[in-house]
Length: 385
Image (cartoon, rainbow, N blue to C red; front, side, top):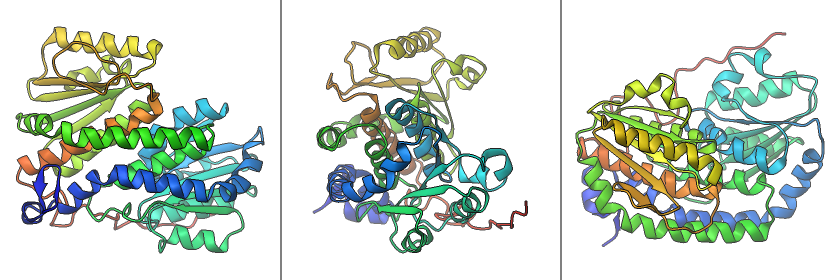
């Protein structure tokens, strides 16, 4: 009988969690499928992207709403480092409400749009506004739904390229899990400054590592979820700060707000947000493998341990070190951008387990409909210059 995250399918169906558990578990398989898609479309997407990336005045905006926006938050620092020029993550929810503050008509712009469904009203409106206000506009759509509005737009537009994520990435559950990781992985490969041979090896190694951790972490994560924490704090530096934002949202969503969550950078956390730590708080640190950055992560790790104020404090690290509560990946040399995937996997698993522990159904933690899988109730107004 099939099982996911240590639970058999009938139990998951009874507890309204079969989609979430399956979608977390099948990510390594989807990443391998994504690697094949990237290889198959490499020539076509390069023909679209390369002339743009040769332009020194190009502005790249990574955009989406909610979890899709956090793909950009996590990716932007890594992409900027790889490409060598400015990359910005600006949510569609900001672009649509304040286009005059974020869009520069004088600069050629590549808008990279992330969307699970491709039907969120802000996602469609952001594309329309960019085309309306910027004459030299271009679009790269990374989406999971071939029938969505963004996919259909790309079919008819001469300034757009759409890459569909693998079958199965259009998550059926409320929370985005495999859709998030696939769109992030596609971004890091297409815009990360690596060759296909480099990223194909990295994807394979990352998938193998995460398959192992899906099994190895189950017991420990169940024990963490059983702790009576009411707050979750996720901390990381650079791109891991953006990843921490997504990790904190997963627990907020799947607990239906019963676990209040926050995120921050290692250095930023001391500047006020540290007040969130109390005896009802679980703190998770995502530790960089880069020696310079890791110094700041480890200083905060030691400080939190010395303060001894948190209910629980754990860290995830590629580099082994002998401390209780550290989930070690082993010194694999993947590099920080690829550590995003085991890091977010851990946090997804914890969010799902906490949802079960609270007696909720992670597939739909808000059955009364105040919060929906695809956002509703948004009115898009025409922008008149």
